[in-house]
Amino acid sequence: NGEIFKDISRYALHASFLSDSEVLISAEDRTDTQINGIDAEKFEGTAEHEGKQHYVYGYAFVLEDTPCMLVGVVLESDKYSDLIPAVQTEIDTMAQTLRTEE
Image (cartoon, rainbow, N blue to C red; front, top):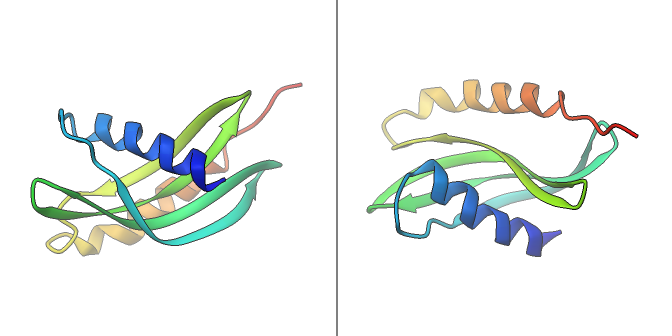
C-alpha cells in the first residue's frame, strides 16, 4: 500500500545515493500489480538529490512481513535518458524472479 511504499522508498534511496540526506521518490505513475502472486506497487518517477533530478523505476512489495523494494535509478536522467528503457527492462526481468516458498 502507499504507506509502505512511502516508508521503504526513503530507506532504499538513502542507501542508493550513499548520503546522509534523506531522498524521497516522487512517483508520478503508480500501479497496483502482482508479481508471481505477490501484491506489489509498480512505480515510476523521480528523486532529487543534491539539486539534480534522477529517474527511478521499480516495485514496492511485502515479502514474509518485510517491506521490500526493487528499484532502478538513472542518475542525472536529463543527460542519460537513453538508459531509461534498459533500466525498465532490467528491473522488470529481476521482478519476475521473485517467489515465495511455502
